[in-house]
Image 1 (cartoon, rainbow, N blue to C red):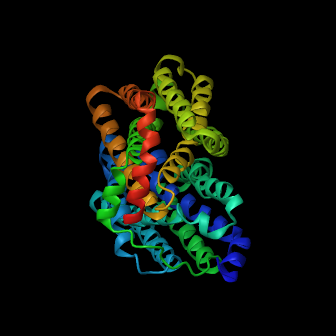
Image 2: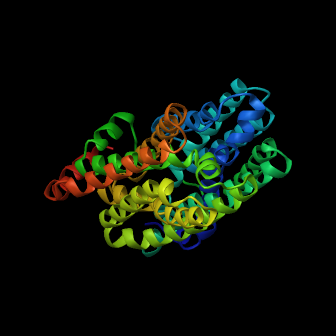
Image 3: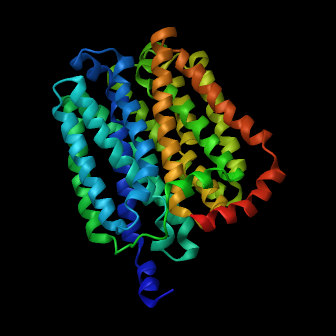
Amino acid sequence: MTLKATRQRKSGWPSVGALAGATFTVVTSEMLPVGLLTPISHDLRITEGTAGLTLTVTGLVAAVSAPLLIPALTKFDRRAVLCALMALLTAGNLLAAWSPGFGVMLVARVLVGIGMGGVWAVAASLAVRLVPPRSVGSATSLIFSGIAVASVLGVPAGTYLGELIGWRAAFAGAGGLSLVVLAALALSLPSLPSEGDARLGAMLRLAGVPKVRVGLIVVALIVTGHFAAYTYVRPVLEEVSGVSAGQIGTLLLVYGLFGVAGNFASGAGAARSSRVTLLVLGGTLSATMALMPILGLTTLAAAALLAVWGLAYGGVSVASQAWLLMAAPEAREATSALFAGVFNAAIALGALAGGLAANAAGTTSVLWLGGIFAAGAVLVLTGGNRKGLTNARCSGRRAHRRV
């Protein structure tokens, strides 16, 4: 390592903080419709299930853009790439704030999806390049804490703002925040030339490595289940628990606060055993979603279940990223792109499946559906062949050399 790189790593924490701001902003931008589905559907004259497509479209686009942007932009400095993607995110949020109809809103959400997929794929792999090796785990948890903090501040703040002065103001605020983060990235990040040649074909071969494949399947199941239910958490709370519109933001804040705690607790747990951590998280999510329509019949009970839900889901990103980076340590950016692609595809699939279930069988059905998917992830983890996962390291090394 050069002297310049060593100094860069010693002074990399402001850059890590800016990257945490970026993950916070992209997830806030993606998730804003969750707390605003009702007013969006009323204003644009669509059903709540249709309004949920604003989340589905963003997730699908992010899923596709994450693995495609990395190879396409392989020759460009990562600092410039992140700034360009944040500018695109800004444009998408401001267009959503202005949108006169559902068609324009979908175009805006496509722009948000492109920006989100690219930012997530690039940012997730940069901690190791910005801080000393002993601090990589903490830096990675901090970067991913932006996801959990988005639940604490971003989504509830958007919900409160939507109640006070309208849902369009929430999207305009997200656009302004995107500009601030863009400036922070431009000022704090050093030059970060692309590492290696993350070709699409090599990424697909990497996905065939057994341990990587298991990790991606688990991510897909947990995230699909979560978003099948969480996308429609506002109508669930209103119909099942009798929560008033003014209390929604407070309950989402409870969820988010416990999500932040779950992020750091799971980061520490994943450093010891990512498999055990994911087992606990998947099992807890499945049980919590299944219990919500049975026990969450009051505001207080709903708040308690949301706290457990947040604690469990808050750790999913950092624990699954730890699993995948350990499965493919020599292909960090390619693995992060696969992770971002699968994660966001699962967000889209979950939102779509939840919308179909809500329209066909009622709001409560999304909770049962989410619990089934999370239980599937537990089955994958418990039924996996440990010997096969151990031997996967050998095949993984061969795949890494081709990435």
